[in-house]
Length: 418
Image (cartoon, rainbow, N blue to C red; front, side):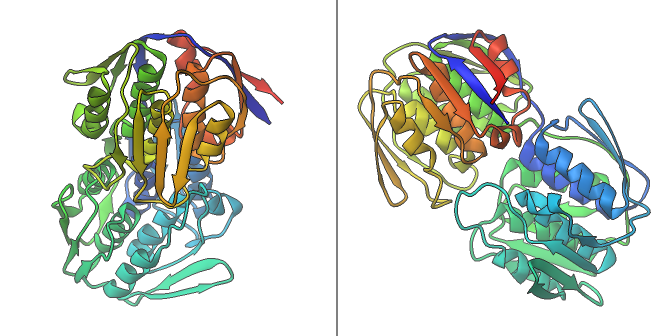
C-alpha cells in the first residue's frame, strides 16, 4: 500500500506532456481482437494500471502482446478462447468492450460483469439492446454476460440515453455484420471518434463518428494496422485545473485544444488565462478566482470525468458555485474528504452547492475512485500544510506517474509506503 504526501502552497511552473487518452486506449486494445490477420501496433498508449490489466486479459484470450514504452503490439490471429473470466476482467469497467469485439469476430463471447470505480449506477442495458438488435442472444448467469449469434445483421439502433460505452461496443459488434448498421443518438466524445478511426484504419467502414448518427457498413475481415491514440482530454483538464488552483504558468504539450473547449471556457469565466496553440495550451492563474456554475453533459458539454477536480477548484473560488452532476449520481464522494480540509459544500441529490473559502488546509484524506483521487491531489497541492492521500491505487488506474509530473512543475509531493 502506498500514499501521496503533499506539502501544499507551491505555484506550478513549466511544461507537462499529456499522455494518450485512457478512455480511448481501453477501447482500442479490445478492438484489436477484430484483426484476423496481421499485427496491430498502437502508439501513444498510457502506461497505466487499466492498460496493464487489459494486456493480461488479451494474453489470456490467446493474443500475443508486446509492450515497449508507450507502444503495444497485439497479434490476435490465434485467439484460443472467447471466455474472459479471469479476475482482471472484473477489476475494470472497460472490459465490457471485449463483448463487442469477441461477438463480432467469433459470434460468441462470455465476459464477467465489469467493475471499475464506484461512481453510481452504470447499467449495460443499452449494450444488450444493441447486441440483440444485431441478432445476438444475450443471457446473464453466474456473474457473466453470455452472447451467441448464428450471424449478425445490420439494423437501425436508437439509444435511449447517450452512452459512450454502448456506442463503442455496438460499433465494435457491427463492423463485421452483414449490411449496414445505423446508430442513432450516439455519443460524440473524442474517444468514440478515435475508436472509429482505428477501426477504419484496420479496414472497417464507419462514417459519422463525432455526430449523433453513425453508419457502419459491414466488411468481411479486418487486418492489423499502425495507429496512435489521441491525447488525454481528462488528464489535460486535470493539469489545467491544478494550475488554476495553485497559481502559476504551465504549458500543456500534446493536446487537442478543441477537445478542451468546455473546460477552457469555465476557467476563463473564473478569471484564469487560457491560451490555445496548435497542439498545446498555456494556463496562467493568480488570485481572486470567481465561482461559476457547472453542469456535466455528454460531449461537447462539460465532462463528468473533470467534475471532481473542478469542484475542488470551486471550493477556493470567491462566491457561490453550483455543480450539477447529470451523468452519475454518486460522483460527489470526494466532497466529504474536501470538508476535512475546510471546504464549505452542501449536497442536495445531484447538486453540490459550494461556497468558496479563502484556502483549504492539509488533512489526511482517502480517494474512493479515480477522478476523486485527482481532485484530492489538487486539493493537497493548493492547501496550506501537509496532506496525505490514501487509496492512490485508484489514481494509478488513470494517471501515469502523477506525482512525478507535478514534482517537475514545482510541487512538493512524494509517494511513500504505508
